Image (cartoon, rainbow over all chains, first blue to last red; front, side):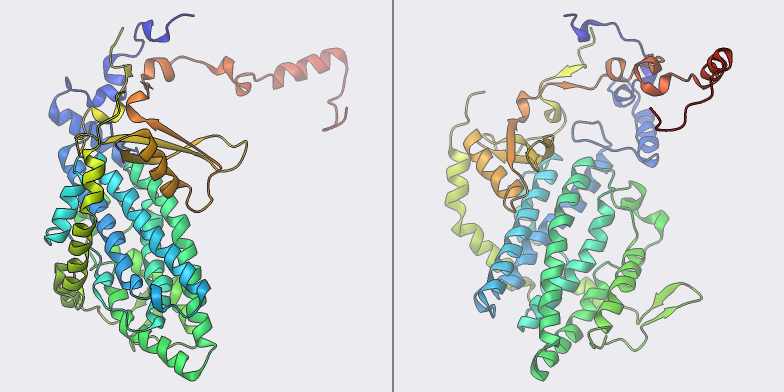
Length: 329
Length: 122
């Protein structure tokens, strides 16, 4: 059999896709080629050449996402031993396991971009990197577990579905797997909420009280409006939709689903503006968002302290694994 | 022969690997018997045994796979040379759509005095 690799090149140098980014192409031209590739909807794989700015931006984005998955299980963890039935306990345990699994998948994507996992944990625990606002709040009642699994996960999935088209291939593929698992969490959360609203007056009051507390953080979750042209993540197509587009999408799907249960959304300004084709709402409290995500939220320090303790307690596992001899290739 | 055509360690050319003894393993999964093995993602492990355990946790926990392949990334041989995979030559003769004979068929029928057979009639 002829060795296919022994064939002489046919394409002129400049037309060879990979070569557009190779070392002998001038830096400026490589950047232009990369921009054109991304703008045309092209994908980037870990072994492709990419500008440092792109690598840093994908890393920052994925790392924050991974941190959020890891920290996001702590509010729910508090209810594992207090779940009302065995089935709820199993479902909640599986959800917590899934979210930690998502953190594992995402840290792996980030590691491939050049930052070791240990360094990412160091930065998270030192407050140098962030996690999502919604995970800085306490879970006061069982209804919180329902509201988080239903509405926090719903707001997250709206964003995550748009990430399945991310320009960074490994992230896009990981998001497809994560979205599939999140859709189960939403059903679990909705079932908890629907069960409570069809229960006693005390149970209904408990859900309403939880929604009243969570509505503010939910509206802040996607972040303030930013002009499309100034958003680096949109420019690089790391994400596909702006924060306001995501919030509008969330409201369109979930406002009717919340109202059909007889729950009241605590925003007197909330209405759909038919003329503008947009939801109007009270401006979310962006000061609260900034305060919370810089680890000054009601539970920020307690949750980070738990992670520090947990990291100490599992140190022997990492040392055992990292210390074992590498198997010869 | 251009030496960029085959690389044995695709993703290690530009990425720093974290701990000294950990290596990436690529995970392929089969959703049900008879399906193709599809790439799922990767795990980082010091040896194949632990790599398989991680793969099971992350890609089989939900009974979403009937089979996993766990492959050391360094053992994958990469070919992505467009010269060999996407040459700019007319290869239409290798595809069904490369054969357009409508007009010739009409001419042939006319010559033979035959009508066009009805669809699905044998």
